[in-house]
Image 1 (tube, rainbow, N blue to C red):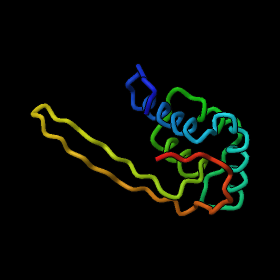
Image 2 (image 1 turned 180 degrees about the horizontal axis):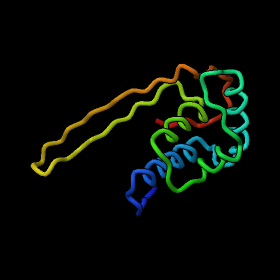
Image 3 (image 1 turned 45 degrees about the horizontal axis):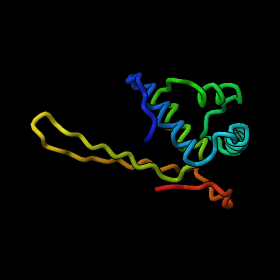
Image 4 (image 1 turned 90 degrees about the horizontal axis):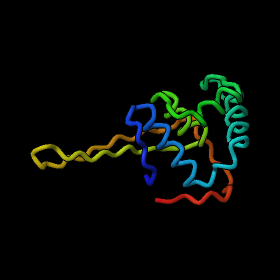
Length: 120
């Protein structure tokens, strides 16, 4: 993540990370399309809580979001099949530990390639 966030609150870190993902996918100018797709999918899937375009827009543009909103935006707004969270910690005694957890999206739909440049 190239963004330097001076606000180290949990919500600000998550918002910065989400915006970085949006930029990497070249979706920064496709907000209306993402919102429309999310709402249309939500209407078809009864398991997704219905949201308004204005509330989604507010979440996307916010400088601070909750873990619940972060996960919802990643999995459902971006229609992500799987997300792997990795963390590397350097402890005060010099020991480095690495952990990861995988979150899958049962609602992810296979879509035609929309030209997004997905980077590893």
